[in-house]
Length: 113
Length: 111
Image (cartoon, rainbow over all chains, first blue to last red; front, side, top):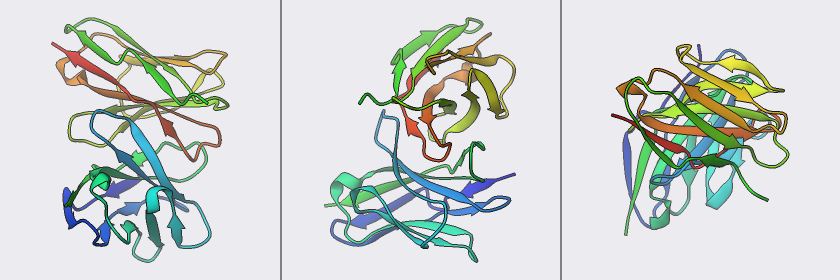
């Protein structure tokens, strides 16, 4: 069975500082990894994905994520946090194609002005 | 280009009743997946429809059923509602199966 772990329920960071939201995964075969963001009372918005290629993936709104196969991690990063980045972030994984997607429990990011 | 739309936005039902939620996928998408997101949790996969058939199913009871129409829109039906079915129900569409676009969700409250 595939799974995703987001070890931090909440991450606090000062505006302008770099941020990292952690994610580790478990899946059979090659992983397809995703990050989504959810604002209050809204659906999920796609940020970025890793399927193959460069380990550093760039996505929307200045976010990027680093795939580390040996550590089975896919941490979300941003060089300089904005207050508007405050939201709930979900990491997700599947084994590709039309296989079901498994989400983590989410990490609340709070950017402090 | 319209994204994924869902209706209704909010719904209140009584235990034992039945409910139908609707989803229209993003233009050009042929696959629809449904998720249940309980408060404070990540989305849980219910099932996926492709070519009007259920292709994948998560760990949900048979009370949860669905349908996909020739225009790729989809319905989620839940019978014999329980209090525990209260959640945000999300629909997601995709074309290649890898990148899903989510609708705003339907908030179901069961009293």
